[in-house]
Structure formats: structure tokens, C-alpha cells
Image (cartoon, rainbow, N blue to C red; front, side, top):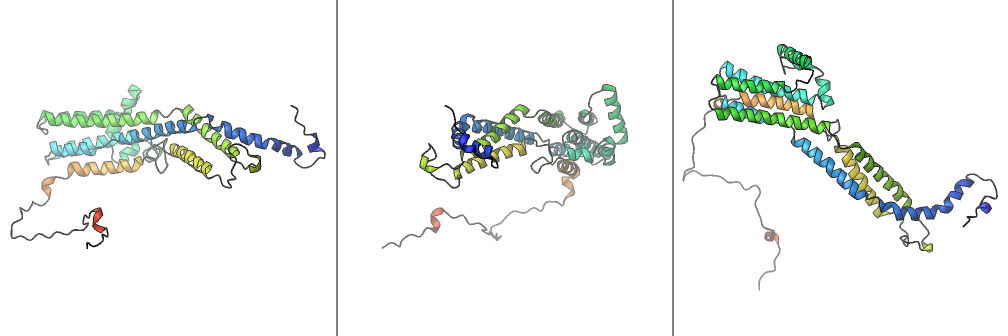
Length: 329
């Protein structure tokens, strides 16, 4: 069927051909409303957000913790002589050095603070001699020496066992197990950083969400109620349900955009620099603060004549306590 439009352009006016396009406006609106749900946006977005959240949480659980190793060092090497102090200090320092080497590969803040090994020497993560050993080993092997400090930790634990600072074989095995656990956590964190969500999945979800937004913008336009188009029987001045749907979809997509890179500089990204400094300080405090240095415990136990004052700050009341019940007659 031929569409007649010559009568509509009898005179040359401004945007005359643009007005012709709006002759098909109602058909475009109805077609957009009919076919916009063909793409399973909710399914695509749900799977995508779930994958991003699982990756973010798994990366968070992979953050290494050196406090356990510091506690075991303070427990199994309790002596106060210089050699015991040196062993505890070196093991903790090598663990923190491993953190610095690993985090500098993932965080721009750590990389800018510690751009090279000399910066780590200046902050006492390693000595100049240890720096030369790391550089020489990396130059000769051609591979990264990021795990070499943890190997030094294991060698120090074995030396402490041979020199009698660690009494039992079980204590040595517990320390080595904790060091290998730190190695596993750092390796898992590196894996989460290197292997991202596939880019094509991100592109497909982004295109689907914004295409759905475009078709929703067309399909929710006002049509003449008197013509009784399907799904347009009511004159909704504000398409509240469509706006709510778009807010949910765009909000979930924004959540995925925010959490897809936990190693960045956003507010929801991991603060590796603060984590490194806190781990460094807390480990030294734990492994070098001796329990016997505090004041002795005062022996005391309650007697029958000893008054004990109890202060009920938050009394526990049942739900029926405050109900107003009619008085019984």
C-alpha cells in the first residue's frame, strides 16, 4: 500500500521532512513496546552482577593476614635474646616485603609510593644487601622474585628449629603452614587481579541495558487514549512503573561498574596502602610485645560477704510487657 504524503508538503516550510517522520510515531512506539522485552535484560544483568559480586568477595577473602604468623612467632619463639628478636623481626619483615611486592603490581597507590626496591629500602622493608640479592636473582633468572622473601622466611624458621629456638617439630610445621597459607592468599589475589570478567560479557550487558533504556524511552511515550491502542488505554502522565524498572536496571549496572575492579582507586576499591601499613605495624607489635612484661595478675575471687553491684543497662523485656491489657473484672 502506497503511503500518500505529497499533500503534507504542499509548501516548503521549516523541518517539513521532520514532520513527515512523525506520521509513523505511533507505529514506532507500539513496535518498541512490543519487541523491547525480547532481550532477556534481567537475566543478563542478574548473572553479570552475580559474577562481579562473587569475584569481588572472593578477592576480599584472598587478602593475606600476617597477624596469625606474628602470634605463632611470639608463641613458639618466646626468648628475649638478640637472636630470637632477630628471627622474629626478619620473618615479619620478609612477610611485609612480600606484601609490598605483590600489592605494587595491583595498586596504583602502592606503586606510586614504592616505585622500586630502593623506595622499599628507604622504608626499611629490606636492606641494601637484600636488594642486591633480589636484583641479581631476577637478572639471572629472568623471572619475578616476589616469592623469594617467603622462601627466606621458611629458611629462617628451619634455622630457628635447628638452633633450638623452636622446641618441637609441630611448632615448626605450624609456622611453615602459616607461611604457605600467606603464599596461597597472595597468589590467589594475583590471579583475581590478572583474570577479569570477560570483556565481551561486559560489552553485551552494557549494550543490552542501554538499548533497553532507549526502547523504553520510545515505548513509554504518550499516545491518544481515544484511539484505544493496546497497553495504552490509560493516560499515565508519569510512567512510574517504567521509571522504577529503569532505576533498578541502571542501578544494578552501576553496582557492577563500581565493583568490577576492586584494585582501582574508587571508594569501594581495596585500600592496599593502608592495609600494608596496618599489617606492618600490627605484626611487629604482636610478635615483640611479651605477655610477661605486664603487671602480675591479682588473685581474687568473690566471697559471700563481698557486695557485687550489677547495673542493668539494657533490660530485656518481652513483647507482651508493654501491652495495655484491660483490667479483669
